[in-house]
Image 1: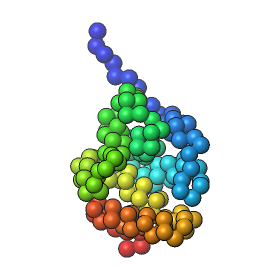
Image 2 (image 1 turned 180 degrees about the vertical axis):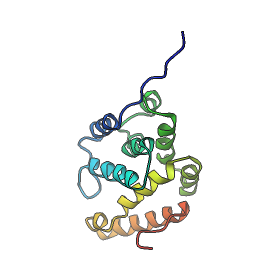
Image 3 (image 1 turned 45 degrees about the horizontal axis):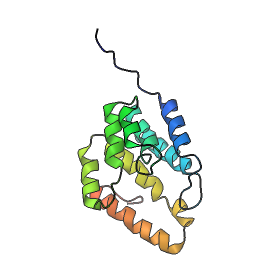
Length: 156
């Protein structure tokens, strides 16, 4: 008997899983964290991303934030490409930004997801809701990551 590959989760199913996994979490400005996930998924879609990349966008912070386990990701009915993108954009404790950027650049499809993530994170309206010290620290962090990934800063 030949094994038939399992059907992959639909984008609405991935979105529902991400929304449930991150339910109750807020961003640094106190907004529902799921707003960020939706903005990144929409950013990937608007940039011409594939369904696999959009699924990865919904899940891009799930393992890093502990909302879903690495084991869940490996066992989920997702394409290998989606799983690889999620793993590529998942920061590891103590990892230098250069190593993180190199992994993203080496993983097909991951750069688009990270670009959409950075675009939302660095949105001036979103940053304006933060205190000055946090805003400055994050602006510098996002500018450095843009440079490491070879991306232009918004407005350039």
